[in-house]
Image 1 (cartoon, rainbow, N blue to C red):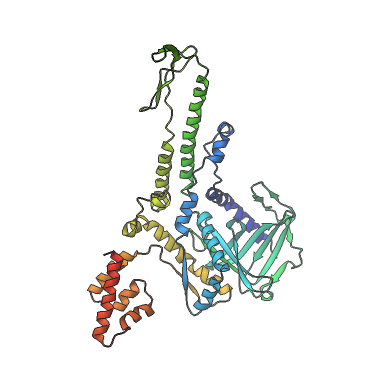
Image 2: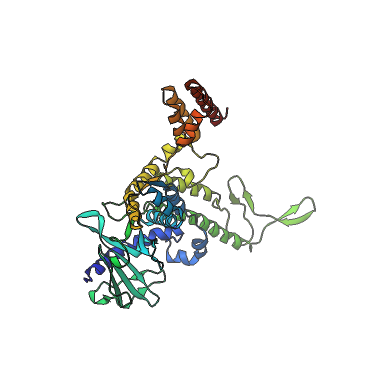
Length: 457
């Protein structure tokens, strides 16, 4: 049992740990604020903790919401659909898809539960790594899962095509407050596990066929390689948004300090014509320019002050939100909603063309991985079928159907193109028809009625 694979897994996982942590933290709102000096953090810690406009979750959701499993094809489609309908597999896939877009990689392990049933188990990117098969990059040479138990002992489970090897650290491992593990990279720091399962588990004893893992990656550089976070170009802009937002708030706070200092000045006096008595001259502010004038009186030092416009915060957020949307290729309304100007139809598809292409590339890439996952669950020949990430709306479908009808497409096919099932389309053209001519009249009448209803005429 060579420990060299464990050491390779530790090195590989730790080489990507920082970017996994960064993407996960930003999506969760735990931003780093690289522009904040120690003095800034000490003085304005309340702003860094409370004032936040996190657009990262909206970016991730703009893509993952369009990765939707429609069904399964193949001889095992019915069995695959039954497995998906029970809820657990769908939950695991939802977690894995969001993890893959957020940090770049996600994993699913298929392993027997206490009853002996094969069940899928979601794993985060920072828990698993692998080596691709040099002769088949789409397959694994091995997969390693790393974790720390309650006694701070590190564990490594190495899955090979024919067996599972278990390793553990000789001493405890160090874990930071952020649960970042410092894994030992020395050969003598690891030993075969001493638990009841023994150092090796033969797959035949647990009913597993081959390496029981599936890997989902977003935008990998290599065939069978690791992916990248969709947030990699968003994080610098999120930092810019935070900086702009904090700068406005800090300027307002700094402006308030001299105003508070002015409370102690001695104002000048003038005669109040309504009472005949003297009164204090108030601070004069020009509301059109937001400038302060005529601050006079004994001990006063300020004669003019231009306060920042805190109302620009919304404009700053909208500007950065639109910029982020352009960078990742999604409509700005997905990041900065504007209920009065949300695109639809053709306009929406044009604006979201890059997103549509990214979603289709992702589903194409993970289709064999999900087919492999279903194979591990005991279902042969089941290929996932995905919902179109950029569907046409009803009015557009009617427009296409009318054009198809004009060049002679069968009415049944036109109705199917409208989203009707084949049974419903056949029923429309056959119900109550005694002759071919009657079939045509009834089908056309229903077709035109639906068109009128769809167009609101």
